[in-house]
Each structure stands twice: as structure tokens, then as C-alpha cells.
Image (cartoon, rainbow, N blue to C red; front, side, top):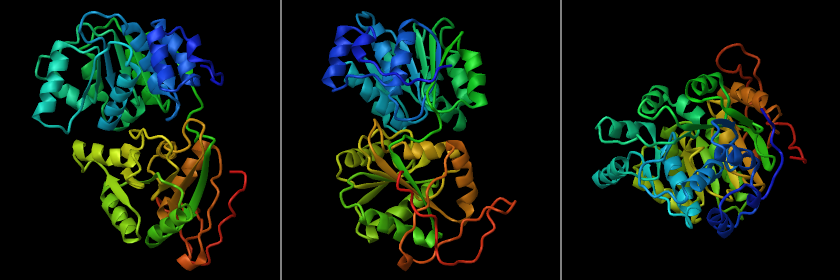
Length: 414
């Protein structure tokens, strides 16, 4: 296991000139730590298990060496299978493949649900007749496999991205079934944001003498200014309004909620207060979700309200601020949520609204990130908030009566 801090140029990583031209064309010069250490091992045909938080460049860390290997490939068999937890991540990775393979003749196809009959036919053709790289979600891929026409006989590389999220979503059985269709002799790469015991169990089953790479995990990016805001539920929209109004120059804001049923409620509250916003959740069709993301990327939509499922699937640069409408159920998801801002060494802000029931979750988050999150004091005219108290032994916090909201002052060095 190695802690990675060094940075080197892409020209030092033994990639072919066509890929280096594509990388240069996209404006990149230096590799991130995960790219620096993973790319040589992948080129050397090693199995790897890599643990890195969101926003570290891990997609390019496995795409670049795979594209390097595929350069000059003449047949159209499926060489590489990439399995991901969500449709959004499948689309994102395929787009990155297309961008990086601009100067390399490599074909790819994303396989995911939510489309129409035409999408199914396109996916079927790719799985039956071959594409160099297939990027797929487990459920939809199994649907095609059950029809008997998928040809995985020539797969040389299997990549599991966001492996921990797939296990959290209950895809373990699906993954094992998919892997049973693949050649036993292959290179397997597993990327995960966490290294929970269940990840190691799966790794022991499917990896062969893997090299392990670990970045600093479960820690927010240094550029994120974190804040907690103790609020009752009926104060949340007014508090969000106050925070956003203080930042008129922010053009890209994400609000996360743990419940998709709250997405529309939050959007309506924001619109009533004059903020242009849109919600995105699994209730939308794939076409609708892609349209919302296009509007957010182009800054036509200033505020995006999303669920936790989207926290790892949104790849949008220069997000100014993340607001957690509620504390996530899983402390790890806090890191993924606020990891949407302050990417690639930029700065960003994150605010988490905490009601009386969420206080114990904040304790878990602070233990995970090994830091106390500063308390943010909203104006008294918005009302008085709850008092920080986690003394009860029950599932919720024992709460004192409302009183003047006097949180700890915001630290100036955050």
C-alpha cells in the first residue's frame, strides 16, 4: 500500500504519441497521483485495486492505459468491459473515452436502461458484433446476457468503477453472474472510493495477485470550506435563500437530499424565492435527466437539486457550492456530495443543514473525516435554531427547547 503525493507529466508515462496528442489537445499536462501510479501498473498487465476519492482523475487512470493497449487493434471484438453503478456514470465514462480516443481509432458503447427500442438495438449490435470498449450498468447488461447473443469470449480487461457503490446498491450477485461469462484469463481493475471489508472480499474473489493503490480516502478536498447550519426543517429554505443571496456571483450550485420525494418540494421552494432551479432523480427518464444536466453544465440552470445516487455520477467542473439539505445516511456519502466542488485544486463551499434527528449522523461524519466542521450562524431574523445535543442513547438526539441560536463562530482558516 502506498500513499501517493508525487506528480509527473503525462509524457513520462510511456503512452503512445497519439494519446499524448489527445491529452495535450484537452489541455492536460500533469498526471494526478492516481494516474501516475495506476497507469504504469495497468500497462504492465497487473491486476489492481485502487482506492481514491471522487475528483482525483481515476477515470483517465484506467481509460488511458486501455486506449494505449488498443491502439492498432484491427478486429472488432469486445476487448474491455467497464461496469459502473449508474447510467450517468456510464454516459460520463463513454464521453471521456470519446474525448481521449479522438486521435486513436477505438470504438465504444454505453449500455444502460431508460432508453427506447432503438437504444436496445444499438446496444444489442455492440454486444453481439463487437465494440472495443463496453461501459455498462449491471442490470441492463444482465438483460442482454439473458438473451444469449452477447459475445464476451475475447474480453481481456474487466474494470469495476465505483465498486463500493455497486455493492451498496445490492449488485453483488449481478456482478458475480456477469463475471461468470468472462474469460478467466484477463486483467481485472477495481476502483473504489472506500475500502470496506466487502470490497476486499470481492477483490479476493476476482483479482489475481493485485497491486494496491491508496490515496487519502474519506477526506474532503482541501479546497472545500465546510460549514454546518443547525436548522429546524421549516427554516431550511429560508436559510438556503440567505446563503445563496450572499453569493450572486455563484453560477453553479448543487443541493443534495437523501430522499427523491423531497426533490420537487425543494425546487418549488427555491422557485418561489426567485431562484432558477431544476431537480434530477431516478423519477426522470434518461432523456430528461440528460437534458437537465446539459442545462446545468451550460449554466442555463443555476441550481441543481439531486439525490445521493447522483453524487458520484455528476461530472461537472467549477461547481461553486454544495448544500446538503439534509445529512446523508452514510458518512461516506458526505465526502462524495461535497466532492462535487473544489475539484482539481480549485476552491468551493459546502453547507450542511442539520435538524435535530441528523445530529448523530454529523458525529459519524466528523469521526470519518477526523475534523470538526465549523458551525455557521445564520441571521437571527430567520428564527432560532436547535441546540447541538447528542447526549441521548436512542436513535435520535434528545433535544432541548428552542433558544437563541448561538453556534460556534466560523473558523477563519477554513
